[in-house]
Image (cartoon, rainbow, N blue to C red; front, side, top):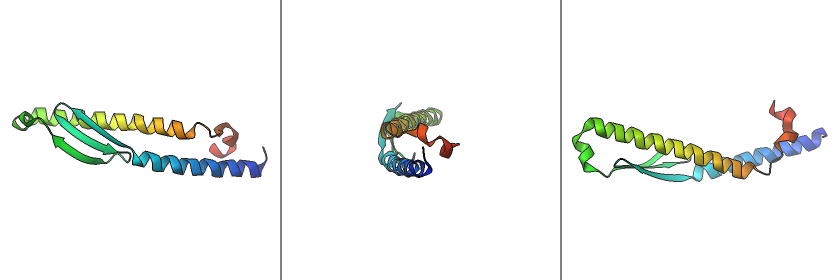
Length: 103
């Protein structure tokens, strides 16, 4: 492959990566677990948080465990969703032709 074509493919890859980044930032996920509800976006920022089980307010230890469990699940699910979105958007990019630029 000639240098000009490789540079053109690298620019295409960069454009696709920028598009993917913007699409991932738009992701929004709601998780409800153990009486806690949390919303998280593609930047891994918590956008809302609620305690739906008021009994948790009476037991600090249980509340803390529930919050941690819910947040961990939200982060894990968002990571999976982000990876899936990236794979969807990158499926047509000929990465193997860009070998010299990726090493």
